[in-house]
Length: 460
Image 1 (tube, helix red, strand yellow):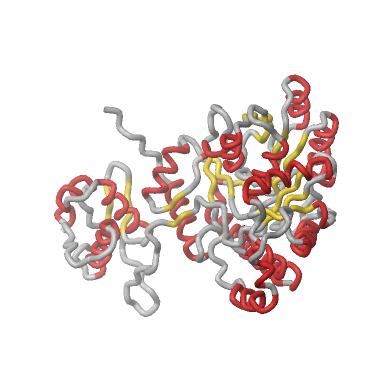
Image 2 (cartoon, helix red, strand yellow):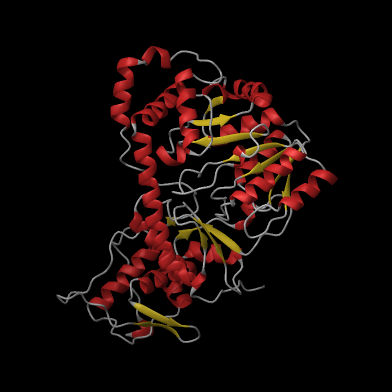
C-alpha cells in the first residue's frame, strides 16, 4: 500500500503518536504494510490525520525503536521485516513510558523503606516529645545521630557541633545566611549546583565562578581571586560534583583548603552525594575544619520525603548559622529527624545506603553500555552523568530532539553562574525513574538521538 497508507485511529486511547505507532505495528503484523513498503511522508500523514508533524515524527521514532521501520535521510521511512520470537508470533514491546524523565538528580521511589514500622514504633515511645518545640539545633539524640552520619562521610564530628536542618538545601540556606550579608560575593565552580544560584538570588549574593581544570576548581585561580577581588564565602562540592561528576583528589582538596585558610575564607562544603562512592577522600572540611561548614542530608539516600539534613559548623560560625536556622524554620521537623535517627542507629540507614549505591552502580553500568561510544563523564556509583555532545549538536537542539523522542534531560545553562556561555553538554540522571527498565528505555532513546544528524529549525 505504501505511501497511500492512512491508519484508522478511532477507538485507540492514549497519545496520538502512540496510537499511530500501534496502528503501524498492527498493519505490519497483518501484512497490510509488507517489508520494504515506503511510508507516507510525515507532513502528508499529519495532514490526513489532522495532527501536527511533530506527532507523526514521534510516532515514526517510536516505530523505529520497536524495529518496525528504518529511515534514510532524503529517501523516507520503510517497513522492516518484523522480528519474530522463537515460537513465531510478532512481538511488540509493551509498557514503554511516553516520557522518561532523566532530568532530576534524585533516586526514584525506593518502595522498600520500612516507614510504617518505624512510625508505629515512634508512636508508642516518643509522640509527645516529637509534637513539642525543640531546641533550635535539634534534640541531643538527633544531633548525635547526625554526628554518626557525618562520620560515615569521613568527618569526625561531635554532637554539639551538629545542627539538624530540613534537608541539604535548607542547610545551604542557613550556612550562607549565617556567613554572608546581602551584596557579598560567593565564589563557586565554573559549573555549579543550580540550588546555589537560587539561594544567591534569594539572599542578595553574587555568585562568581572560579576557573577550573578537568578535576575541578583551580587553587591558583582561587588564590588570585581572593587576593585581587575578595569574597565572603566559597561554595564547593568536591565529591560527585553536580553536574560534572568530578571527585577531587586529596591533593586538590588540601590545596583549596590551604587557600581558604590563607585568606580566612568561609567555606560551605556540600557533600550531598558523599556516601555514594564506596571509596572517597576525606572531606575538604577535614583539611580546614575551622573555616568550613559541612552540609549533608539523608533525603537522596533514605527517601526524598525525609527532609532531614545536618550542618557541621565550627565554633566561630555556629551561633550565626543557628540564628539563621531559627529565623527560617525555628527548628527542623522533630518527627522527620526522629525517623532518620532511628534508621541511623538501628542499621536501616546503612542498609538503604548500600542498596542505593548498588542500584546506582547497576544503572551506571547500563549507561556505560548504551552511551559508551559518546564517552559521557560519570562516576560508577553516582546518580547522574555529564554528556558532552558530539559535533554538530548544540545543547538546546539536542534537548529538544530528546524531548521529541520522549526523554527529558537537563540543559547546561542551569549550571552556569552569571552570563557566561554554557558548554555543549547535558546532564543525564539514570537513577531518576522508579524502574530500571524505564531508565534503560530513556538511555536507548538518547542513543537514538545521538545517532541522528541534528535537524535545525528553518529560518523564515
